[in-house]
Image (cartoon, rainbow, N blue to C red; front, side, top):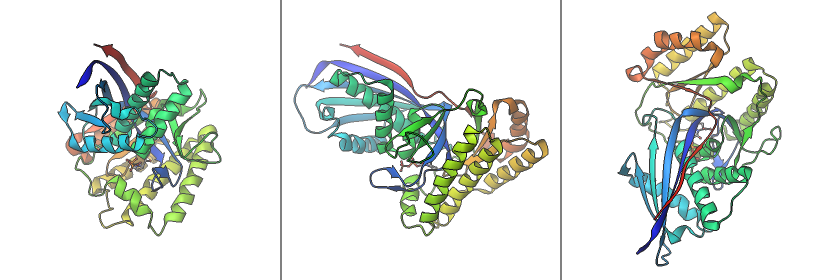
Length: 356
Ligand code: 2P0
């Protein structure tokens, strides 16, 4: 039996693309190294959580998870695992019937990190629910910090999707208030070109990859280059932070490309199915390098843990970049598909709504 009144909360949370890559973790979802990402604008997950108090006290957490309108057992299991882990700090969870409805506004398996946006949206809903149940409004900073911590427990990269702009996650001496527990927005100065950074996602393949990110992280525990990687990533994070502060766009480009290729070098050497790049990926990289050289631009590529390429550039280069993508790069994309995105301002509260 459940009581009449239900409450509905909705958040939209964007995905993000890392320039400094989180790769390897310890304990419960703590990163081995610091990372830095661009929060995207368009590519987002929308999640609605409806909760309704049970009449009888039952210890079990009750939830249903719908993705794109259909029950989704895999996401339900993943969500149940997270909620179970949160029981001690959110003791009210078993007292409610929880129903999640979630949708992505970007195509499936396109190399956009859907776990980042979906876990961020889920965490934001849970922290909103906590505020309502406890009749306690948190300060804005406290709210998003808590959401970032909870998102991290669901998926590491999701910790960064709770904030807009450029975001870091992981302790690093050069970044004030940085933490392994939650992400921190990186303060850009008004004149920084990074305020106008854009991302074209070139979809080389939509096939589900053989090696999941979770397995990739786990393989780092026994990787022969583990120590070197941790050092390299933390140094790269420190260097890119200084380059961003000093408007050194060539350095940002060099460090970002070094990170993308380092991630894949680690992947190649982790496991026999760690070769995730495709011939088209390398053609795109070559084309970007040639285009950059012949035009004297400071655009660059980065790659997530998959074959698709993110072409990162600035708004003032758009007129020259779009024809380049159409004429030179789209031929390497599956069905000519690419996504036009840019830096975004972060999650959006959609609805706190009560009906009875
Ligand atoms: C990142 N990636 O920094 C790195 C770069 C992919 C390559 O974080 O196991 O889905 O859920 O914590 O966050 C992908 O791993 O892994 C990732 P879990 P996640 O964006």
